[in-house]
Length: 390
Image 1 (cartoon, helix red, strand yellow):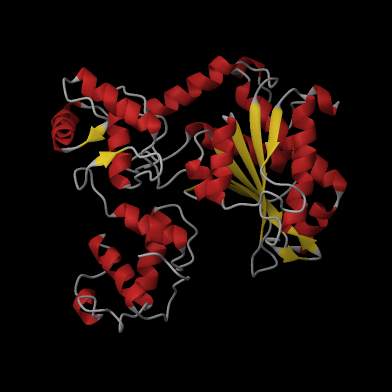
Image 2: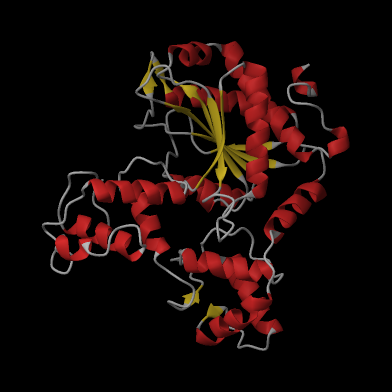
């Protein structure tokens, strides 16, 4: 089913019946709800009731999505992904239509545990996962076709008992950072000013999110360029090039960037809500069975968060793992910065000033430098000064 609109508490119809069926399959909704809601028929009388709302919120929390009880495109997509288990279907790489699902994430984790580099565990079967699968097949005397069919699945299943879990992808990412050296010159960074064009984002206190983050992006671009960093912007001032998050991720992947920095501002119905938060790709808690996270993204988000709080005095809303499309679909670590609440009079007053935007841009660049510095050259939060800012 292709989702035609948002679904929330109080809605009815066949689409709600399908949502309920997926929740039942995942064990998040009582099985007897299937008969009560007419799911075996067309489902015209299926209701998005309190039980479904609670189940959706629980699922969104599990999958590191925005917890709002609303089934939009991303929540529905992840409901579909969650139903797959390794062995349920044949897995193969397709350039035009990549397979996505929890079975792919399990395959990636198994391959990594056995020493075959498929990159980050993201549940997306791309070219790197196919190469790792071919290497596994070659090493274990299987037919080398890059497809996880019955024979390959049986081999993986037999070997699973001998595999000791770990985080090899984290070690690989750390080694890549170490090998690239401490200098920022020559590195490539994609700066993504959120929204733009016909999508202004949050509008409050006389400010537009799209305009605020565009100005911040230009200040950040200037500082990066002064340090020899190749910086790419995902859009122009008037929104030229404005695209969906998946397309922005594709743009970043095409540049072969080292990092992606996505800039946003937030809103809240409570005007007292204020502060800065940063987000990295991470789905689930520390006990997540698939290890869906970007260790370098998590570290960089923490550095950005601490520098912003120390240098701007904003309220610390901490770092969080999320499975939003831009964070998940980029092959390189990506961080999203929510720089205050435009609905907060205090945050809006800060964001209005050029001096604050300068400090925010400086904070992000300093965090970027600290990411690449070896421990013996690093300095405490808020202390590092770069030549461009002295």
